[in-house]
Image 1 (cartoon, rainbow over the protein chains, first blue to last red):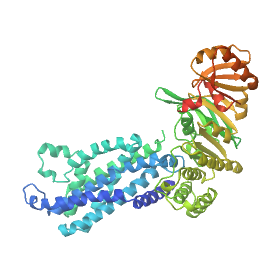
Image 2 (image 1 turned 135 degrees about the vertical axis):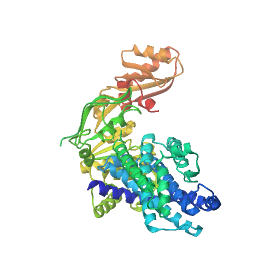
Image 3 (image 1 turned 180 degrees about the horizontal axis):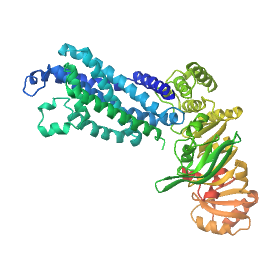
Image 4 (image 1 turned 120 degrees about the vertical axis):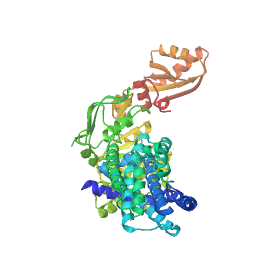
Amino acid sequence: MRATRDTWLIYQRSLTLSLRNPVWVIMGILQPVLYLLLFGPLLTNIAQMPGFPPGGAFNVFVPGILVMTALFGAAFVGFGLCDEMREGVVERMLVTPTSRVAMLMGRSLRDVTLLLAQALILVGLAIPFGLEINLGGMAVAFAMLALIGLMMSPVSYVLALVLKSEDSLAPVVNGLTLPLLLLSGVMLPMSLAPDWLQTVAKFNPLYHAVAAIRALFNANYGDGEIVVGLVVLVVLAVATIALGARTFSRAAA
Amino acid sequence: MNTAIETTNLTRDFGKFRAVNELNLRVESGRFYGFLGPNGAGKTTTLRILATLLPPTSGTACVAGFDVAREPQQVRTRIGYVAQSGGSYRESTGREELAIQGRLFGMSKADSQVRAAEILTALELVDAADRTCGTYSGGMRRRLNIGIGMVHRPALLFLDEPTTGLDPQARARLWEEIRKLRDTGTTVFLTTHYLEEADALCDRLAIIDHGRIVAEGSPDELKREIAGDVLTIGVNGECEKVVELLAKQPFVREAGLEDGLVRLYVDRGEEAVPAVLRLLDAQGLAPLTMDLHRPSLDDVFLKKTGRSLRESAA
C-alpha cells in the first residue's frame, strides 16, 4: 500500500537527518537529565509528606519526567518542518504522488522513535537513584509515551504548516505546552494541589497520562487511571493524526 | 498529447486580491514556454496552480492531459516542479535527495540509485554527490534541484525563476543545462523576470501583468510588434518639455518619459539621431546621454504595460 511504503521512506529519511545533526535530540534529553540529577533528589524528603502518592520518590518522579520529555520532544518538532519548508522540501514533495498521510506519519514516527530512545536513557539513569523497575508496567508506560508523541507531534506540524515560521511558532508552542505541563503533576503530584486546581487538571490529557504511568511504574495495575489514560491518548492521537494528514493534503493551498 | 498545458479563464483570488485573472493559456508539447513579468504579476501563483499546489478559485487548468483540481495525482506523476525556494535540504547529500525522489515516484531502491548516478553524471555533480547540499555553490544547488525535478523523466517540467540570484557565469551554465532538455523532448514552462533569460531560453512567451496576459508570441514576434528603433535620451532637466517637443516631430512614432529618460520610438534611428540633436540645439539643450538600440523585450513590456520591467521588478 502506497501510504505504508511512503511512510517508511519518509521515516527513514527523517531519522537519518535527525541522527546526522542530533543537536535537537541531545538538547531534548539534557533538560530531563538535569531535572533528574538536580531536582529528583529534593523529592526524597518530600516523599515522606502526607498527600504524596505511594511508591518511592523516583517511581513518582521519573514518570513525570518521561511525560515531560515526550511532551517537549513532540511539541517542538514543527521547528524542523519550518526549516524544511523554507528550503522548499515540503513543496517539492507535495508535487509528487507521495501519500499525504505518509508525509505526517513518517515524521511523527521518527519523533516517537527519538523520544522513546530518550525515555529509555532516562530510565537507565534513574535506576542508580532508586527507581524500581517492573518490565510489564514499563512496556505499557512506553506505549503511552509513544501515544503522547503521536498526539502532540501532529499538533506541532499543523501549527508549523499554518504559521510557516519559527518566529510565530515559538510563542504558540510555548503557550500550549506550559499549561499542559503545569497542570499535569509532572513536577509534584497533583494530589498536593488544592481541589480547584485538581479539578482543572482533570481536563488535561497529560494529567491522566502521568497518573497512569505512575500507576504502571508502581505495578498498581488495578488503578482505573491506566484505562482512562490509554483511552484519552488513543482518542486524541487519532484525532490529531487525522487533522495533521488533512492539513498536509491542503498544505499547498 | 499535443497540448501540455491548457487553461480556461483560470482565476485565483487571495481574499480581495485577484492574483490570476481569467487566464487563457495554451502550451504545446515540446515547447520552451516563458512566463515573463514583474514580481507580483501572478507568475508564481499560476505556476503553483498548474503544479497542483494551489486550487484555482474559478476556471480550469489541464496539465499533461489531466485536470489539476480533479485529478491532481495523475498530474503529479507526469510533471516535474522546481520551486524558487529550491527543494534540496542542506543536511542531505545530493545523491540522497535524488534517490528519495525516485523512491517517492515508485522506483525500487536499486533503480533509484542508478537514476541518481545518471543525473549526477549528466549534471557534473559526481564529485559533490556525497556532500551535503549545504556545501554546494548556488549554481550547483540549482542544478541539483533541476535534477531532482527530472528524476522520474517527466514530460513537462516547471521551473520557477530558475536563475534568480545567480551570478552571470552560473546563470549561463544553468541555461546550458536547461537547453539540453530540448533533446529529450521535454516541455519546459518557466517563469522569469529576466528579459535576457526569456530571450535566451524560450521559443514562446507570455507577458503577464496584474494576473493577465498582455502579450503572447515568440520573442521575435513580440519584438517585431515594435517597429523601428528605440532612442533614449538623457537631458538635464526639462524632460517634459523635450518630450513635448519631440512628440510633435513626424519621424517620431511615440515619445514618453521613462526612468528619467526621454524614450522615442522612431522608424529609422540613424536619421532620427541628427534630427533630434538639431532640435535640442535650437532650444539650447544638450543631451547628456543618447542610446539607440533595437527593441528588446523590455521595450515590449514597457509598451504593453506602460511600465519598465526593470523598474517593476525592483
